Length: 149
Image (cartoon, rainbow, N blue to C red; front, top):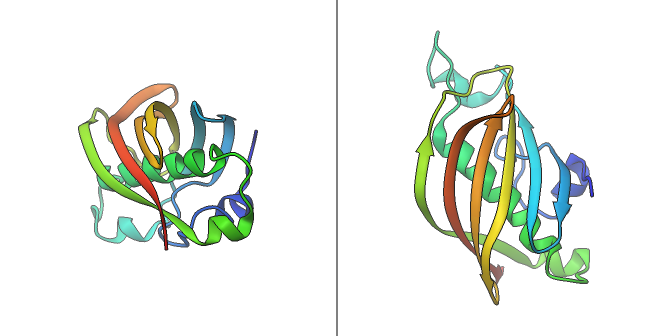
C-alpha cells in the first residue's frame, strides 16, 4: 500500500509546517508501516536549529515516527470511513528508549519504519526506527491511543 500526502492528510489532522510524513511506501495492516519525509533546508525549524549548522531536531524525528504510527493505527482499525477518521485523533502517550545516533541534515530522506509491539483496544505500543540511506539514525518505543475529538 502506498499513500501520497493528500491521502495522508485525510488521516492525520497535521498540516504545514507540522505534517512530518510525505509518503507511505509500504504497510501491513496491524503490523508495520514504512514512510518517509524529505528534509529540506526550507523547513522553518532550520531558522533556529542551528544557523550555519542545520541539524533536524530529534523531537521532530520522534514526532514523524508518531505520525507514521498514527497512520498505521488508523488504517489498521478495519473498515473506517473518512468521516469516522475525521472525528478521531491519535494522542501520543509516552516515548521510551529514545536514541539519536547520527545527525539528520537538509537533503536527507528520512525513512520511518514503525512496527507494532502490541495493541490493546485503542492503545498501541510501537517500535519506531528512522533511517537515512539505510543507516539507523534514531529509534524509540512509542505508545499512543486513538480517542474521539
